[in-house]
Image (cartoon, rainbow, N blue to C red; front, side, top):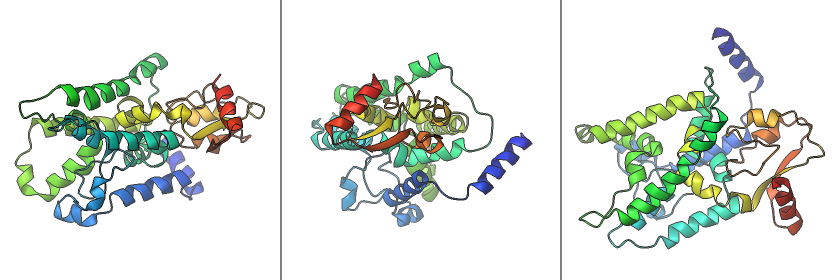
Length: 306
């Protein structure tokens, strides 16, 4: 264990620069949670920007949040008293998905940043068996269609307002960014802590531990927003490209992939979050990325998928 920690320190000394991905992740996290006074006073920001959905999972109840969470907004629109069809939220999410796909997950998501940092802790790493991994990845689609869409639309209560099931029972970003800071800042809220909050904290703790052992477990298995973006992933304007003539099949790209994507077989898999790690470790620079506007580029992507 000591030897592993010593090697980790050495790597850190040699790698002093911060990657482009990390800089963007930090900038985005600060930008969309920039209401510092909210953390000090324990009050939620209610300015005009709170009506705008950010493209990432970021709790509306976070004291510093400057915008609305798209998953929370989707549930609120579907499960509200009038049960409106969420044209605005769904249209905005589709726009994000078509332009960027899961690049949003790899480059902008604050909870993705947290998982990346936790995985860097030098402890034993666990490799999920392929059969279990592949089956478990479907869970996030079930969560999206059942907890985010179906239950808010059809599990109508006497008040005709259905609770945001995903936010209420699962969302770790809400617990970390909203629930815990508000509890720490407001003593009156701490007196109201019950089984539900304890459950949410347990979910968060389990995911934190898992993130130390497995790269991006929440993104792989639970995130409904990632599930939605993956539906547009292969058709989004931003695509990855593999030059098979340059590829030497060293598999360094696959060993570095945080989502365990089989890069050389299916580079534009719906599970790819466009983090760029495969590109950075490729010794022959066979992997590249770009916005696909031309028919030639789109045909290239389709041929790679075959």
